[in-house]
Image (cartoon, rainbow, N blue to C red):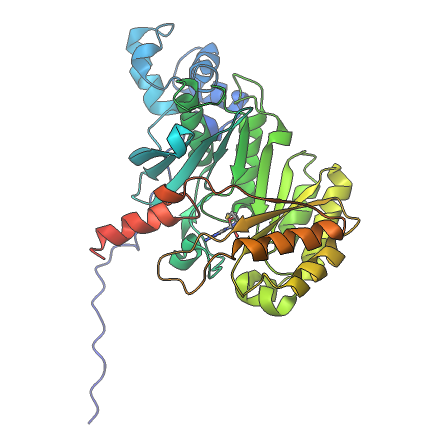
Length: 377
Ligand code: SAH
């Protein structure tokens, strides 16, 4: 007689679904905030007062909101400005010009953001998802898989929080005002499309509805989700699109950016050129230089032929090797030759500076090291 497998007894409890991130004023436009404030039995103008504290003054401590009646402050702040991000680690490097933050979200998920100061601008690199489902083998975030999408407010709050850090004047040699946002932290922004678009609207709405940044100073970086790229082109936003190409041929790109198995180099570039035509904005082509993998002269020439005459700029990124990876950055002479060939083809090309190396500044490595240490690895 064969024994039947023993089935676990049902406890009768419904499967547990993770709680949603707390609702926050940055999830809503000003009208939505006013409606919420009214529901709480407060006059609608309190929405504007709270928004001015959060987006205009970068204040989130209710004690500092002295224009609100003391009795209402805590209650309003708790309802409209719950804590979304708790700093687990904050680090500075590059003599204080780069600062990196690792955040824990309400459900324990970890995400990271980087603040970079330059002579003429301050850029924050933010995450759109906890983890990432795109599985690019050279990227630390890609190795860990997707945990979840971030809410609009969880995305916006990274920028607002770090705008506050910049305003305190601690970013060496840079203006005290956040000016640029790049979606190049953890996650694939176009896989969390609706929340990312809402976040862009909040970042660019004039204060106090939003942070008042210029759309032209926002960069959305994608692995190349073609339908979402086409949808983005229809939004009438003038944000910069960055395409993580990393290889000019399908054979290699299928491996480096696995979503290429679905949308090929030619399709993804077509979508990029349509974006450029619609918006008049130059598309940024991201290319991580990986030693002996994608850095051959023939690949530079092929890339040059694909991009020549297009509204494109190539951003070469020296590979930041992830722990345990078999890949390394290209040697400088190889990189220089790659640049030379692209420029000879008439393609505008620069090499990205490598900020934040000594604080695991790139690509999910801080969160990876935190998880690793938590596991005792
Ligand atoms: N998912 C989006 C945005 C996040 S990553 C995208 O892929 O575009 C931002 C950029 O950093 C992408 O171009 C990505 O390919 C690149 N990147 C990831 N890991 C890297 C590494 N270890 N070294 C150099 N660049 C890396």
